[in-house]
Image (cartoon, helix red, strand yellow):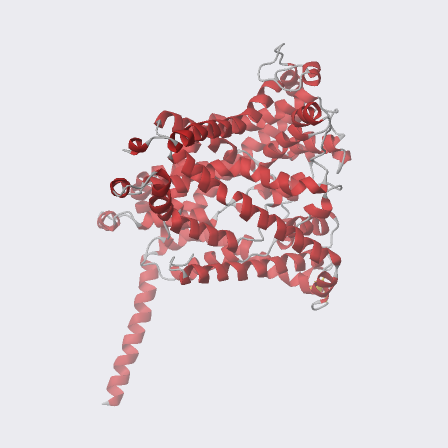
Length: 317
Length: 292
C-alpha cells in the first residue's frame, strides 16, 4: 500500500519536472529573447561585483586578479584611519543635508504656488519654462555657471562690482561651494520636481474644496486641510526614497564644479574614488572606498524600505 | 469656485504669487537667452557690455570659427553616433528583456527579476567596472559609452509592467493563430506599445546625449570625445586654469563667444526635441510612480 503511494508520489514529481521542461521548451522563444539582456546584467553588473575582491588585494594590473597578493582588510583599515575619511563623510553628509533642507521642499512649494494660478495658459507657459533645465546635461549647467560666475567678466560679478563694489570668486571659494551646488540643483530640478506633485494635486476631489468653503474655510485653511493632506503620501514616499539615496551626491555635478582650490569641501566619496582610482591608479584602495559606500547605501535603502512599510506606504520594492 | 473668497489677504497673495512665479520663470530661461545672445556677439561687445539679450552688432564669427575647425564637428559626430546607436541598442535590449519577464508563465522569471533588483541595490562600483571595460578592450572605443549603461533597470521594470497590463487575451489569440512568442511580441505587443516605446526612446536618447561621466572615465583619445566632454574642456579647463591643461592646449585658446556658441550647439538638439520631451517625460514619471 505504502509502496504504491510512494510510486504515485514519484510519478507526480517526475511529471511535474517533466511539465516544467515542457513548459520551458514550449516557450523557448522567451529564453532567446531574454538572453541578450541577461548577458548584459551578468557581464556589466555581476562581473564587476565579483571584481570587488580586489578591495582585499594588492591588485596589480600586470598580475591580474588571480595572482595579486591578498591583504585582507588593510585598505579599509587605512581608509578609516586616514583623515580623508572624516573629510569625505563630512562633505557628503553636509551636502546631503543641505539638499534635504533647501532643495527637497522647493518643488512642493513651487507646485502649490503653480496650483493657485487659475489662468491655464499662464500656468502652462510657466511649466514649460521651468521644466527646461532638467533636460540639460550637467556639463551645460556647469558651463553656464562658469560663464555667469567667473571673476573675469562674468555677469554676476560685474553686477556685484557695481552694487557692493566687490567681486566674489564663487568658483574657487570653499565657502561658496555648497551654496553653489545646492543653487544649481534647485535651478535645474525644482521645476521638474513639480510634475509629480501637480499630478497629485490634479487628482484632489473638487468637492472637498467646495465642502471646505461651505464650512467657511478661507484659502489658507483650504491649503492646510485639503491640499497638503492630498500631497502627504507623495511627500513621504519621496522623502523616504531620498533618505535611501542619502549618500548619492551627483558625481558629474561635483566633479565639474570642483577644483584644487575648493577640493577641501568638494570631495565626496564618488569623486574621491575617481581621483584616487582612475587618476592615481590606486585600484584596490579606491575599490575598498567604493565598497564602503555601496554597503552604507544598501543599508540606507533597506532601512528606508522598512520605514516605508512601517508608515503604511507599502515599501519601496 | 475658488474665486469666491478673493478678498484682502487673498488678493495680496495672488499678486505676490504671480510676481514670484514670473520671476522664477525668467530666472530659469534668462541664462539660456544670454548664452544664445552672447554666442552671436563679438568678443569686444561681450567684454564691454556686462549683460544683454540682444547683441548690438549681430555676428556669426564664433560659429564660423567653430565650423572651420575639426574638433567641434568631430565631437558632434561622435555624440550623434553614440546617441543613435546607444538608443537603438538600449531599446532592443530593454524591450526584448521586458517582454519575457512580463509573462507569468515563464519558468525562472522570478530568479531573473531578483537578479535585476539586486543589481539596482548593489553594484561593483566605478573601479571594478572600469577594469572590466578595460579588460574587454573597450577603452577609447565608443562602445564604452554605450554598453556599460545599456539597460536602465528602472526603465526595464516600467516597460515590463506595461506589457503585463496589456490584455492577456491578445497573447492567447495570437498563439491560437500559430504565432511563436517572438512573433506575438513583434506583431501584437510592439504595435500596441508605441507610446511607451516613444517615451523610453527619448529617455535613452537624452541620457546618451547628455552623458559625460562615461566619456570622462573611458576615453583618453581626444578624437573620440563627445560634445559634452569637449565643452567641459573648452569652458572649464581653459577657464579655471586648473586641471589637465595639456589637453586644453590641443585647441587654440577659445574666445568668449566660441565658448558660448559651443554651449548652444550642445543644447540645440535638446531644445529641438523639447516639445516631445516635455510630453513624454512627464508620462514616464507617471508610469514610474505605478509600482511593478
